[in-house]
Amino acid sequence: MSDTLTETPKPTPRSTRGNGRQARSQFERVSLILAWIVVIAIFSFVRPDTFFTVGNMATILGSDAVLVILTLGLILPLRAGDYDLSIAGTLTLSAMLVGIMNGEHHINIWLVVLAALAVGVVVGLFNGLFVLIFGINPFIVTLGMGTFLAGIVLLISNDQTFAGISPGLVNVVVGDRFLGIPLEFYYGLIACILVWYLFDLTTFGRKMLFVGTARDVARLSGIKVGRTRLVALVGAGVLAALAGILYAGTSGSADPTSGTAQLLPAYAAAFLGATAIVPGRFNAWGTIIAVYFLATGVNGLAILGLGSWVQDVFYGGALIVAVALSQLARRRQEQEIT
Image 1 (cartoon, rainbow, N blue to C red):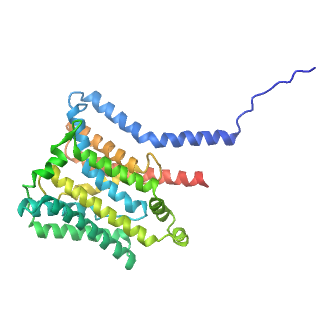
Image 2: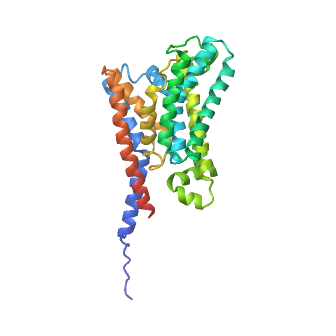
């Protein structure tokens, strides 16, 4: 009788490549989280008494809730393949309406909140109708709308800051806290969960992705492309208006330049978020992680004593890098599918 020897089969090159791709994909998903942890560790080591404190962490989480909600609104049309450059103008107009109607004329704050949200709906509708009916590039439409809204704000405010906003709004935004963190952080978290649910667990969310990646194919498949794009732009307007309400509640006032500095960080966070969790796609969890990653970097550099130029340089550089990385992630994803 002869003994038979059993040899362990060697992995094929194809299986090795598959394992390598899977490992790389998993790393890409969490790479931004790991980078965030590294940034926190570095600043905590350099400035342990001022950076890594409960107060500073609560400040970072709370103060950037406005940017979280604004960026979540931005990724709605981005997911559907459209840009919206009017979100900063919508935020500013919403905040200014709160300041004028409530702070100046003492109209009930919750009626004012509804009015501000309605303005967001109207702005989104106008953006969508001009894009769809006249076939104008959304970049041009929303750029013009943002400039138009900035002019309206200057007109109704006479270039003045309005204070005296109802303590009721201020309290539910920054006055009241849970676990030491202002409630506005949790509003951003709730918005993130809702957008995640829309994108990942609803048919409409999948349609948005289809429209954004293959618009002509989506149209031939029977998807109502125009309606999908319109809803995305209206959703962006509503969330931008909500961000404006939170902005007014955070500071207790409204000024004509409230949203001017928010547009660049929102785009930087949106594209950086598209490199994490679901690389190559605009997604809710990647967005909120990107916002706080960038906010942590700016906060840490400010604590180190660098000048006010840091924020512009940091966000501008982050936008360029984020767009490049998101494009690389999308191309790699397309190559793996094919």
